[in-house]
Image (tube, rainbow, N blue to C red):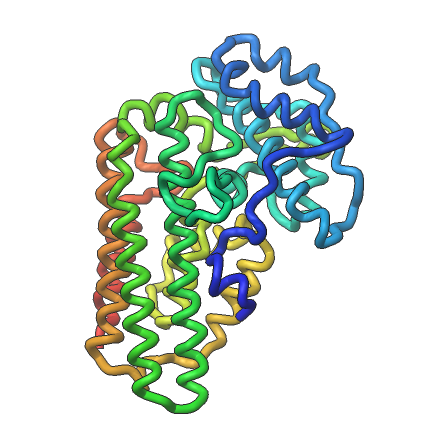
Length: 360
């Protein structure tokens, strides 16, 4: 496992870029103005006429990755704002001036051409104090759909959780070393570290209601992160395409724990959905999940209390998520689909039950 994962979790290192330069700068200006533009019913007219600068290369040099990520963030927000503008019917065509550069950047990044969890959260933050922690109070977003702080809080809670996940990944790496040595005590100690990191992630997730009002979430910015359904990407392909919207299921944190703990979730549409979500994860995250999946099962060397502690904290984390989904979505709409297009309530409960069902 690369050291960056055990130090920064699934967040990028160094910190995400804040500004584009040169010919790409106009996209920063558009991103800054986007929350105000989306308040105007004629925003789509302006966005259709905006000259989006194209990403200049067809291949990716490592030094260019931070800028390409920010380019994708800015353009992904613009595309989702255009298609899902609040107060207007969903658009069925993404104009060529947005679609062509978005699809090009997405191809270079090896990902689908829609704003996903990585662009909405993983690449979308900055620190006030560069030497301070990646934690609430010291972080802010780079790009938003609305001016209201509720959206920033929603994103930043996830950013802190992703940072804490480094401790869980470090524990997984340590457990892997211990398993190679058949060191039962080392495995048990590592499992307790993973359980504690998962508990801390749940503590942060509990903070969602502190600065995010359910009505604001549901009406003011949730529509912008919904899926695209039968959208034509003009200048790219005239065949309508559908893509899953931004959702926490595109985070690699819980999938990494599931892969490490070898939790045998039953084959179902849910598992097909979660497998499909990996397409929307960064390529290096997908690779790490494959590496963790190939690790041996810690169960034979684990003490039951340590092993079960990890599963219980995972189940509690999922329960917190379930509770917020119920408060912020289910109580406000009869539509059973989440932003990723899934019947989330039924599936979340299944995941909780199967996680606890795997206890020693």
